[in-house]
Each structure stands twice: as structure tokens, then as C-alpha cells.
Image (cartoon, rainbow over all chains, first blue to last red; front, side, top):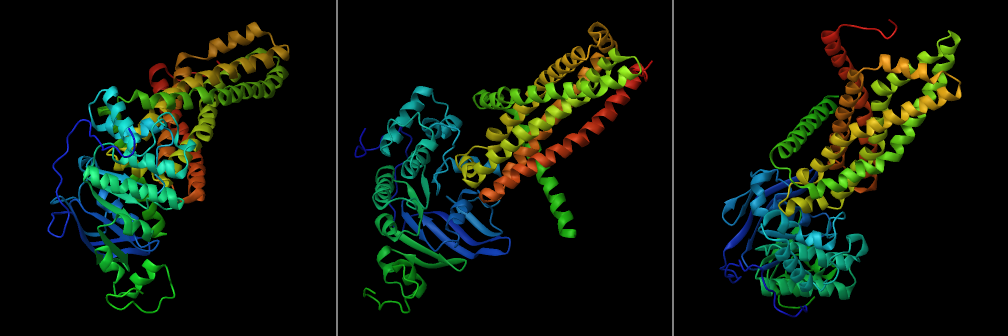
Length: 279
Length: 262
């Protein structure tokens, strides 16, 4: 199967996709979230929602809490205050066992891929299937083959993560994240540390997952090329909350100087561009 | 000071919850032999060389130090009783435990600590799996089940080491074995193996917990490995004292107090 073939789900359990847009249902909502690590306050009052079917890119400088936000959504971290809603249900206070069914609806690509180094590529991608599906090993093998083919990593089943390059690990991490055909995919810095061509390949894969699996995607990055390429909507975090939120074009013209400095990668920029113009 | 005490009590509470979670998995739903097999190999097979080396030299050193003392009072063959009883009851289990704490405990803490800092533990949770079930239970079972067997090996080579030295010193080996057989009871062997099972459980729990608590970076992982060994070592000594006191009480209650000198 080449990378351009459509993705097949095995078995086919997909719900009919809903169209993203301003009127689409809010799938994930964080309300008044506060999170502190020791003396460092990451979020003071984070309120943001993500609509079903959209690809939202969360921007912000290092240490602003982008990855923390993803971990809060998955329940890997608990907020100190505030509430998190997923598909209409509040999940903030759920215990580890109660969160498991919820997590199976998500896929997450970690920053360093976080592949299990004691398992082969095949076992990594098959992990969630073996854990949650009562499928035969033949069915699992077929799904793993398809997912690896989707990320152009066919033939690497028997390799260990240490034998893969950074870009290959990210691709296998993505195959693992989509193995269960999740409703939502969370991408934590998917292109960080990759060369521009490999980074663009990852961007194409994100777009392809969005287009063919119709997932809701939240992409955390500080790579503006990636943000503009994959995002329907950009959300910028700073000073413990959201400082800008809108479609890419609106963010490009956003009057806040912190946003302009970030998107232009220019710390000495002293004035925001005029409305409607290019800085 | 108050903060230190609060930290220690909080840490103990977390350790208790961690242990309870692991026991719940073992008692309710541990069927992942695929996960246990590599741990059995790591803890059992790969620890054999260090265990054999430790046991052999402990037995030989004990013999070298004790045989001249017994020779001085014309009872060289009696040294067999002391050497072998010491190996079976005390030095075999404790030194095997200490060596496992160093070789396996440090590696467990470093391995799990690395998994934590590379987000592999978060990835397990994100995939809807419990890291305690997948990572801690197999390591715990491997240590708990195999350390008694490693202790048997340690005892065996310790006894052989003592015998070789006794033979080298010209001790009457028939008498040497006779005195050993007269003094060492099944209860002594059982006591040594029971202790080692507790040591194995303690090493696995402490090392896995320290690995899970590891701070970020190479320094955090290194510190977790060091703490795992130091705490395991101290707990082995403390457990040793209390288990010996308990077993001594059990023995006295069942068979009355006896001395190897009468």
C-alpha cells in the first residue's frame, strides 16, 4: 500500500464524520484551568474549546504549557483548579481506571515519539490493539501493516526503536497513535528536531490523517510553517492563558505584539502590523 | 523540618498506594506471561554469574578465617558447622539480596526512570494501559520468585567454596560434612529462603517506585538508581533483623531453644 492510497479501517467501526466549523460541536473544553509546578504557574486561567473535526494548532513559546495542555486533556496530569469536558462529560475528577475508556478514543504522538524501547516497531503499533481489542493476531498484523504503510514505514516491523532515525520514530509514533482509529489525535511538537523535508512529510501525514480519518486534531508546535500548513485554527498561549484564537489569516494580522513577535520569530519587533497589512 | 517530615509521610503514602495497586493487579488479572518472560531472564539468568561469584568467595573467606580458630582448639572439622550455617542462614540470603539490589535494583530504577523521562510511561497511560501492570508487576514477580532460587545457588557455591578451602587446609572432610549435617536443619534453609523472598519483593518495589519517581534528565535517573540501591540495602538489613527475630520466636515456640554447642 502506498502513502497515497486511501486509509482502510479494519474492522470498519467509524462513525460518520462531522464537519468542522464555527457551528460544529465542541468536543473538548477546558474551563478556568489552573496548573502550577512547584513555584512555576503554567496556567492561571486557561479557557479554550476544540470543535469536532477541526485541526487546531496550539502555539506558544517554550515552557508556556502547550504539552501540559495535551496531558491535561488526556488526564495524564490533573489541573489544580478548573474543569475539563470531553464530549459533554466532565473528566477532571475521573480516576485512572475511569479514564482508560476515554483514552482509547484518543491517539497521541509524543514529542520524542516515546516508542517503547523494549518492543519492536510491530509490537509498538500493535500495543493498544492487543490491550483493548479481542482480535486474532492475524487481524492485528493486518492493521499494523496498514498503519505502517500509511506512514511509509512498511518493512520495519522487526526493528527496535533504537535502530530508527528521529523522523522514522515520529512516523512509527504516528502509526501507533492511529492504530485504534481514534476520534482525536494529539500531536506534541510533531516536527521539532526534524530536517525541513522530513518535517514536511510529517505535516503531509497529519493532513492525510485529518482528511481520510476525519479526526479532530490538536497540534502543539512552535513551527509556524507547520502551523500554517495543517491548521484550520490557531490558538496562541502565553502568560497562563489564551492570548489569540482564530483562523490562520486572522492570527497573521493579530494586533497583539506578542503574537507578531512569535509568528515572525523576531524578538525585537516593536509594533504590530496595521490591520489588513503584512508586517 | 516540618516540610521534610510531610514529604517523607507523603512519600510513604504514595509508596503504599503504589504497592496496593500492584498487588491488586497480581491478585485480579495478571496473565501477561509475554511480559514476565524477559524479566525472568533478566533477573534470573543474567544474575547467575554475580551470584555464583559472591557465594563462592563468601564461603571461601569464611573458611579461611574460621578454620584456623577451630584448629587452635583442636576442632577444625567443627568449622564446617559454622561456615555452612552462616552461609545458609545469613550470608547467602543477605549477600545475594545485596548483589541483586545492586545489579537488578539499580537497573530497574534506571530503566523505569529513563522510560519516565522519555515519556514512555505517559505513552503507556495514553494508550489506555496501566504502567504498574505492564512494567511493575512482571519485575516484581521476577524478583520475588527468582531470588530464592538465586539464593539456593549462592548457598550451594558458598558451601562448595568453604569445602574447597577446608580440604586445602587439610581438614578431615568427612568430619567436616558430619558436623555440618548435624547442625543445619531444614528450618535454617527455609528461614534463609523465606528471607530472600522478602528481600526480592522489597528490592523490586523500592526500585520500581524510585524509577517511577525519577526526576527529569540524566542526573534524575542516576539519582533514582543510586537511591534504589541504598534504600533497598537498608531495607534488606532492617527486614533481616525483624524476620530473624520472628523466626527465632517461631522456632523456640515449636522446638524449644537449642544451641549448636550442645
